[in-house]
Image (cartoon, rainbow, N blue to C red):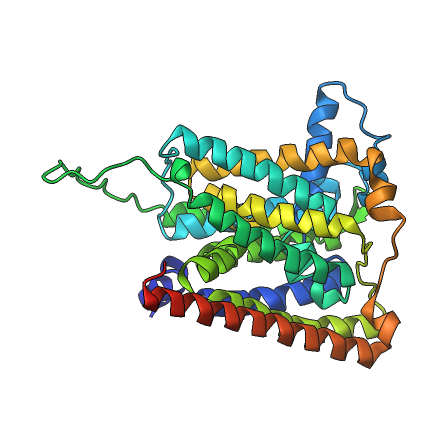
Length: 398
């Protein structure tokens, strides 16, 4: 029985479809319990600021940190411990499946593509006040209108990105040679025990965090955030959840299963988040200005060039794929660059525009209805793109 459970749930990959639905439920309860939305790039920006402080740069007076906050160290913030736990959760999943393998990028082009794409995505995410999580997967269920503009512009950015990555200068130069020597694959080292030990240590730390007050945040809240982060990272890695792949494959191959699962996940989380909001939990609402239009497009373009969104590069980096570690470094650079330059265009692009909450604009049930109608429109768009691409493939156009 244990062998079957281990092989089925801890070693093998999970269905991306059901993994996304599980992530929707987890993000809903994360919001309800901690009052925070599941997001990562805001914390990456704080990490960038923290690194600059180590080199003597004073970032406390940067206007962007007045918007997203810059209090304490990462282990003193809910977002900080949640994000670190996500990395650990993804690593545990990798070790359980014995899939860690340090691999280098296949070419210099891939290195440049990963870094530049990461910078563009990081910059765009913070300009649009969120990434595929805060301004899409969890932003839409929180009834912030900005998330809808960001989402549709991100999809457009992904579409343009798919056209760029198909250009000859970005294609692999590797050639198939008849009779070439094929090296014997390395024997996979069983790392399940290492994963179990890391999980045990993580749970001990989480239990300790839940005991009393510390760091200015309740330890109990930090512990809960860590537990959710562990679960987020584990599920992402097991389900190989990548929002980039979901929409890139839609445009390239006409495969819309994952994209449709994302929409279904938001159908589920919208109702749960609505219930928590009615009970008094405040949603995250941000400006509806040119920043989300430009930022959404840049984010979609960047993640396609880089080959992975925040979820995608995170779990791949925890498998030892250096290319995606480079994407993460690019994200950090891009988001920090946005924070530095924010003072030059914040009013022109963002802060002078209104924050629109659909529940306040249309009433509780009216806003709920509007959000569901827009989700139906998004689903219809996905279905139309899927059908159009599949027809082109059948006709031999692709």
